[in-house]
Length: 442
Picture 1 (cartoon, rainbow, N blue to C red):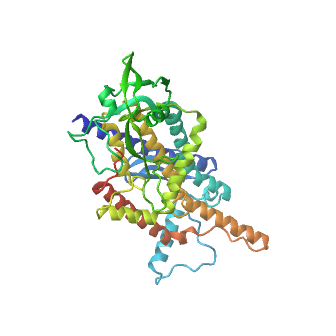
Picture 2 (cartoon, rainbow, N blue to C red):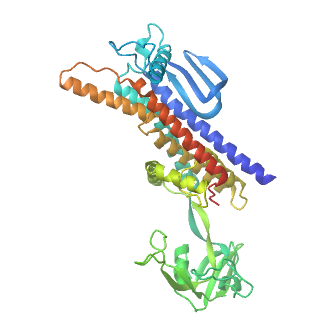
């Protein structure tokens, strides 16, 4: 029962964090819009039926029933129809009717005598600032959260404390998964090493890092060593003899080395059968930008390869393949990860908080990168439209031509609808995959 409640708590914390991130994203649009004099009719968190709202000035602030996003409603998002265009006739097609209706609906948000407070009348640079305000807010949130995680809590690193003691030593290439009753005990188990013991010295050489301890052990196969450990404040001396065991060769990045044929390379080294416990080591502020950039690069790579990634997700969801833990997932999948973090009782509360904050930081990076995709109705689509308008006006001025005026983004509504449908289908696929074939980090 307690585990289930903790799981629910993790999901709730993640959901609240996501809603706050969305709210701040929309504030990132709201503040510059109001500073530049644009009339903002609504600031809403969620979609669908309004659950609560209040009006201040000419803006209605509220919360809607479906908490899957948010928006601000600015006057003049769609420029009026160009002078000289033919009016809509009875034979106008569905798409043209939809475009005209959207333009008329948007025109109703412009109050008489307040045409100067419209989005499309702003200089291009101001429009870009408004549309980039949301993603910028997600970047700020991510940087703050990463700073708390990295500098406040710390990054998990190998310590000199024993995390676990193996019952036996199984060669790397063996198909055996568990120790049997006939397997000899691992040297550390024979010597009485226990989880929680802190390594002080091995063979008379003091050790301050796990890498130092590993090097000594691997180079001492068959040699009896005095292992000094600190246990409960008491210093103990244990006699251990590392056993010669087959292990995979690893490169500088910790990946298994392979030969020209693609076969994994192994070597025989001394082993005791112990593994390190991780500890959180606070870093300097200088470690924050690389972490943020690495996350941005990772999300960008996923988006650039999204079609292939979605095919892999579909193959896993509807077939025997396993999900890629580094692939895309929906908010359902992220919620499950948050639930797993809070419900596991083998890690301390501090590490749970650190992990949840890390997940929220990654979510904000995902919102940042995803919203910069240059397609309507995403923020990047509006930025691309403004830039295209600037290019057209630049060349018109360069060649002494008539100002072409604002880009008629209403004409892009069919493309916008197609993007919405694709995003909806993608979300449904990811949600389904996260239910039937979830990604588990533990």
